[in-house]
Length: 523
Image: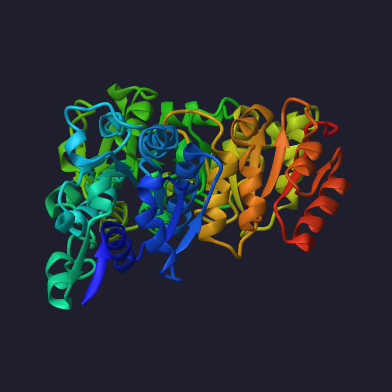
């Protein structure tokens, strides 16, 4: 027999599903979950300074680890603060697991005025894929498993669970038999296999691809969510076809891949509008509906065939008339199309090479332009100093403009940018979450000054928790080395490439988080 409270059931269910990182701030009503985490040495708890930043850390962790982290927030204020960070994950379809206590179940709906009580579940419903309130102690495991199923299905996204404080603190003596009854085996509550497209629909799409002279592949953020980068590269090489990435999918394809032709919508890339105008077929792989809408608005449908794909069949056709639709996950769709292709076409080879050459010309123009700009020169020097396996978050207008081109992905799944809500301020906490997921890699947060100021307090969390990210700042001049010193971290201002190299070596030797002020870099 075990004596278990509601917090124990949450932690045990999540642990058996492989979820082992918790990020949040303590509140009295959620102490049962904190206690349960403390009793299991396999679980990691990180205490940030702000609940919104906690959700952004969980977002970064989920992107890099390809499994959810848990955001813990307390009743009322804590839950509402967390919504700002959860909204970023919602906009980018990142599966994080948010959990909060509520006031006593008999005070909730309709609300009876109570300390910190509010309609928090209703507020979080707008920025989550699914949410629930668990009113019964025995249902906690099944609700946790349902939440994970919703977070990891289809286009994916954040989920939220409210548990009333009386249910959290409810204790029961539980036998092994009873525990097995209320907590089904791990993985049994959701489908985790591949979702293959219909054979006839796939054959029709293959026929369109083989009939196209100038096909263009647009890859989106689900390539990263689903780990489909190898399948994407293999399909693009097989067709062959050039690949443009959406802003949320910066590392869905390595920057040195011959088919890669840039980031859609980037103002410095004149080659992409031309490629969109000349293409005779558009294949969207791993793109969520928001990305698809943006892409379709860029093209002239009158002379282009469009193949829409989605892991959620009900979304197919939502763009209006298209020429083919495929329901399935990105890996399966790419694999089926690749196997169906009969061979190369000299026209498609020439088209792909011409698109790549256009991209390389634009890229050289960007490098030349960077030499005359402080932020551009700084980011260019940083890109030249980075290693192939390094990871980077881009946060802010200057950081994205220069970094998306001058700090290209050396490998897939190594660049991160929150594009869904087009906000800023996530760079530092997201980079910290990525470092938690991949502690052996160097992780950079490339931030504009105004972006870093939004969650600068998390420098203290990086110091306390030993999360050794390298924060590089561009844009408006600011005494960032002084700010770092105030938080007990090393900081240095650099004005040239040689000083930057010294700073990066120091960061590696010190094995601590560090701030590199590049706001006065000499262009």
